[in-house]
Amino acid sequence: ALGKPAYALAHYIDPACAPGETAPEQALGAYIEADCAKALVFRGTYSVPARGIRWSWSRGLKRAGFEGPEAEAFVAAFQRDFAAGSELVLSVDGEGQLRAVQD
Image (cartoon, rainbow, N blue to C red):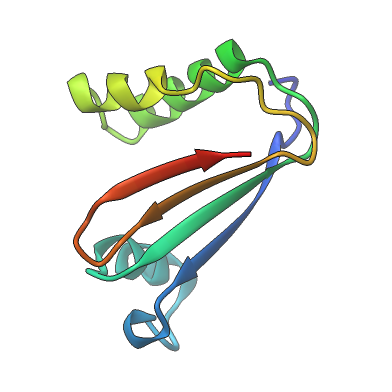
């Protein structure tokens, strides 16, 4: 989307599962694999239409090797435009249940 960041990103994890002192390239893997509550919070830096969000997620997931019905369903869930200052929270509880909330 125009070559500039569309969002700022913060990630949170249950401190009991935090990877601790780990090199950044290893910390991401530890974060992804951790079986505990965690969340990603995206905050819009400028407005992006829903179709642009779907295109970006689809492209990024394909580049990361995530394709198929689950990836398509995830991408299709983005039906609202993402305004500057808007927040999207993707959270997973300790049981692996994914929840997405956009304000």
